[in-house]
Image (cartoon, rainbow, N blue to C red; front, side, top):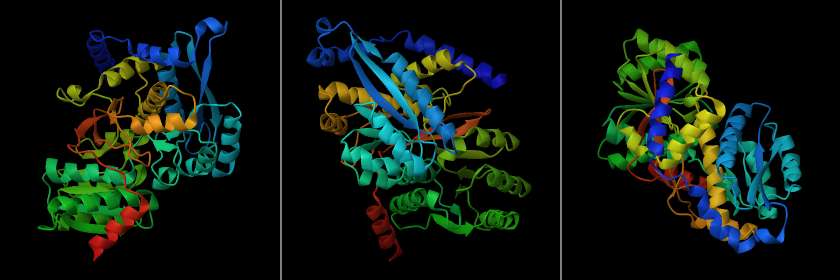
Length: 426
């Protein structure tokens, strides 16, 4: 109840702010309408379809459904513009690579001018072939695999990559916390966090300029009770004041219990964006004295100063989300990224003055400083977003903004990551 009341207060505050701002954003599409739509020539409202290629069942369903909520919210706000209507056509990837191809082909039969999806690395990679073959601009809200955009001229991403997340965490640890005693604990053979760790290590070494060894501990473990206990002892032996740990909710619960036993609660623990999940946030209720920071595009107000970091679109998103889904439904970063993906596409369609896929793709590449919910968007030549990194923490059972990096982080492809790693090793 306490969290629900606090969220309602935040929503009311943002409503007071946004009521002072003009909400005439949809009028920006007038010129687009006049370019290719003649309302007098038809009795029916002309329709443009945007495909939604998301998991609604299977292991990625929670994230996929959250992205759909954000997409549908954006569509409910930016839908009808003087005879120009955007409709959404959804297909379920089922969170499986084996069904993703068929699902995308079914989506193509609906003749979308662009596609949003998917919440899933494997399904997005499967879709890549059809995206490029049909020259249909597509944007994934949250899939981070570099190959999704690296090998495809029509695939974009709204989220930052793992290497960008790592760079953001490194800046926070080294510049904001001024740590020179940083530890890294990772799970053996965990490919899911390899990119974020590579980005983190590379950025720390760049910031330190090799004048000092800021990373004092690097350890790979299995998530057994014994090895977790030993890892915490290693953290204490090396006097770490910041530690990046790439483990899930259950394992982190065990680790934090050991941290408390050894009175190491003054350490700041850094993690990946999965720490923004409901399960992780609930688990942290057992460890209120431990601070965690992770890459997550929270639109919640962290403190009085963070209000200034919210864009007008973020304020609108908060208010409209609460209105559509209820004030007790706290929006996740997946929902916010789904919303931003929709905004990116409709702005590109507007700027392209065309429904041609190549023209829309080019307009997406040309987007500069587009203000969305999760930040300001521009893209590199590979369709990766170039932007500052948003970091969040957990306070009073909610994910709230903690830090926004001072510099923008550019995505690295696999060759860049491997080249950087080899250079640093030599």
